[in-house]
Length: 411
Length: 51
Image (cartoon, rainbow over all chains, first blue to last red):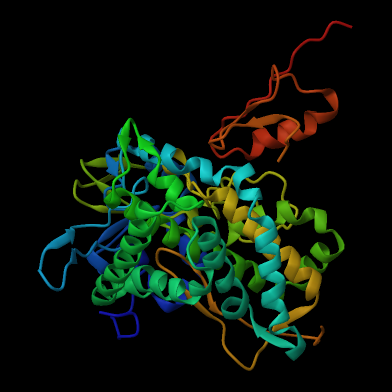
């Protein structure tokens, strides 16, 4: 079944939710508000079956139920085995992407291996590149008075920044986008595409790693290969899996956030003007945009029966921690569906919470701040171009995929 | 959020700078950090100060 194919309409969101429903993907707020009130742990048989939490406290509790809610499966749909097309051998029964797919104690070991590359001081070294890139992208369309904020801008930044950080060819940014969409966004509902793309990516990483084993380079991948896992060397399988994770996790999450932020600013001129007038407000505004337009929902696998908020989730069930819904919980955020651009108290969970909290949050924040600050500096006044539609993707990662904008042509 | 109040190690983990004493002029920032930490890891305690 693909999202474009007709499916029966949702009868009741509490018992039959559809995370790929077009109306839900484009405006999930009212559905979350209804569920939070009426059935905070909802259930569906769709897409392999799952249980979904929409209250902040429930989502936070789930994130801490380790390993009862295990990360061995973390996608919002069931995993598809990765099978070698020539030999028929099962390469991966389910995604192996440490540390995101790991439970303790290995989780901590795998996380420490990569953390230093994403510390604030390490991320700051990539800011000049990010700023230059943002300017170059705007140079490409600013004279025409129109551009697609998702395709021409947001989508092009994270792939090149993460490629720059890892030491792979930045010019293949558009390929990386296709891969990530293939394994995640389009692949979520198209298992064949997911497998074909997964194989392509592993072939790529195999070559990149082999090159550096033969001739070490001064980049992230060579550094990773020299790392140690609690005294053990990093083998090719681990390195490949980490690289794959970083490319995927580094791309469509941040591109979605930049795109959602631009959509908000295009449709809320007062907020846009305020950021133009008070650029020092941007770090606070980025947190608020992350809260209201949080992109990521994470899955878990219940390894035992788990009771949350009075609901018993049976062992073997897929559980969805809906961080975006948690961030609109009125018990934690006054006026939760409104972007309050200078909201000072904002304990949002856009990056998750607990031991699996996003390892790349410093990088994501830097990219968002640089992207938005350069955009607002170059194009301070922009609007939706009503001649073409805005389209949204959702499921695991929500954000605009087309975002046609118009503005006064400039240089 | 407040580099004057926190040190960050090579792994990106933050700890209170120095002995953790918050200068009066940074009290607002410290309280903001406490209100925004998703892990509730920042706690601001009041202390009686000898006049």
